[in-house]
Amino acid sequence: MSENIQKEIEWKPSRSPWFIIMPVMLATFMYALDETVANVALPHIAGSYSVSNQESIWVLTSYLMASSIVIPMVDFFCKVLGRKNFFMLGVFIFTIASFLCGISSSIGMIVISRALQGIGGGCLMPMAQAITMESFTGEARNKAMSVFGLVVVVAPILGPVMGGWITENWSWPYIFFINVPFGFLCIALAKKYLEDPPYARRQKDTHLDKWGFLWLCVWLIPLQIVFDKGNDADWFSAPWVCWFTAVALIGAVLFFISQIKGEKPMVKLDVLKDINYLCGTTMLILLNAVLLASLAILPQMLQNMMGYDAFTSGVAIMPRGVGAFTALLIFGTLGGKFTYKTYGIVGLFCLGLGGWMLSSLNLEISMLNIVIPNIIFGFGLVFTMMPITTLSCITLRNDQMTNASGLQNLLKTIGGAIGTSLVATMISRFSQVHQNGLVKFLIETNSVFVERINNYAGSFISTAGDNMNATYMAAKMLYNQLVQQSTLCAYMTTFKIFAIACFILIPFMFILKNEKQVTIKVKTNAR
Image (cartoon, rainbow, N blue to C red; front, top):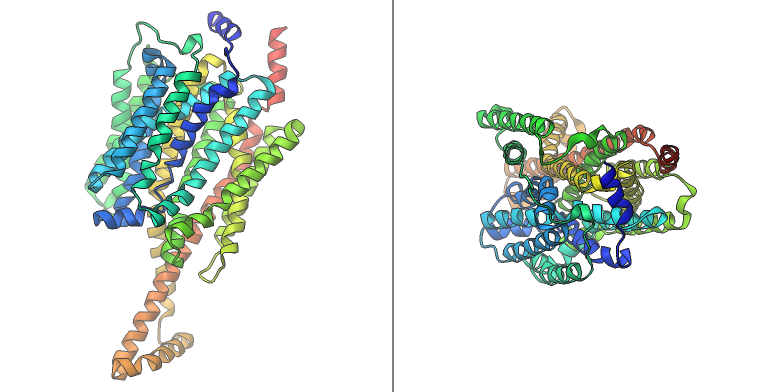
């Protein structure tokens, strides 16, 4: 313990930390952007490979789940290769995989390429978070984490906009090709500016937790298959879903047992004893699920229900970035006048309010009705993600940062992958529920239904040829409207659930220790 603390005190970057985090922020932006850049292009990708929209979701989830598997191994590879070398290797793999995604000739190839992209990108986020926290101290750390938080929040928001514009003006493969030049630029900047502190340099006698890695794969791979394909198989009505779920649960239990009892585990779970870290990480898991799930379904709703093209649906989401940038300006102006707890509470309330406003939309709305909730949502994201991320790690030592960041990003990514997978099921099931509730009004005893079908039949009589065919066409038209309304209600219900989840998290902010309490504790211990 004393040796690690001494290393922390002695080590300082040899150059300005703002130069050090340049490649870090670029890599973070690319990774976070690619979580959502393909969202608006999914219908085009599905069409290119002649697959269903449900199957095209694998393009998103394979990326997230592959990231989850590699994240716990970040600490190991940093010790084997040195963090700087491993960072550059991760960017290189991500860049090459991006090129392979663009040239993919089948859905299988792009899913595998996206998984490889996730493997390269998954290691970047925890290293970026650790490097940012380590390179700065005091008020400068708060500013750096503000920039980091803005990148993490804004990049997934800009993803659909950039993806939509590129898809409409060029073609969808270019949403992956654009990573190539920026990837090599990031490698060059990392080679020039990154530095490794003593505890993040290449070390001898490094041990790989082979069993931990095995159980992690046994846990996550079947779990993702269940979430992606379970709805098509009617969930637990299918025996294979039951078996895969059982395997995933056993894998999860064995993974955590191996990490607790192993002499040199892949991730050190002792950081979970820290209340700030445990509570903050739990909140971030749910928030990441809400963020990625909402970004997955909102473009689909705008394209499928309202006839928006890929670019316009991305533009409709872009105001989230405006809200996020506004929140950052306010945060920079107010500085330390309010605690991170206060910012977090305001942020969660804004997230809930934005979600609730999205849950009250209809098919006759204007673009403004989508813009305003997204501005509020984006405002809430910065005021939520940034304070909670900082507070969750503020009570940890510097030598714990890489491991803690890896575990936190593992759990966050799993939450995002599960949220992205489950939201498709939520839309499907809620649509069935609302359809079942609305269809009972399509009966002859309902005077409104009779009047409407007679009006439609009257307009079809000239083309139908007789009253029977005209009535059939009218009934079919009404049923199509019912299906459309049921699907819209499903989207609204899903957004309402997102809003309620954000409101529920507000009381948990009071559990977290704020930065002033941590400072007082450190001073007391020093005495």
